Length: 103
Image (cartoon, rainbow, N blue to C red):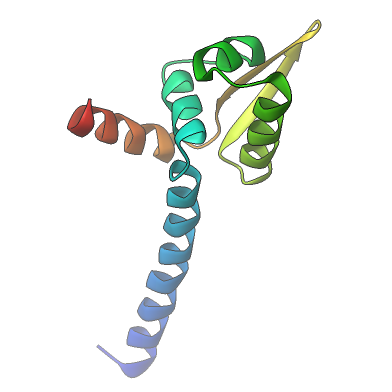
């Protein structure tokens, strides 16, 4: 393997590490993890997530806004309700593995 190939491979690995680190940061807070565990099998409304996590609507909005800006979840509005789902299929696979191992 040439030096250039090794350098390119190293850069690619470093970029992937940064990407994975960001995903794991999203999982590192109990409320964010609870939200993701709820939406793993399909979208949920803000009200459903708020009830499940037992936090205020405003706190849930802050968590969901951050998760949406990080590209972890996506939202869909229907009437007056907003529904959230996981944005990245890789994250679904990761969460299912975590669920299988720990739950």
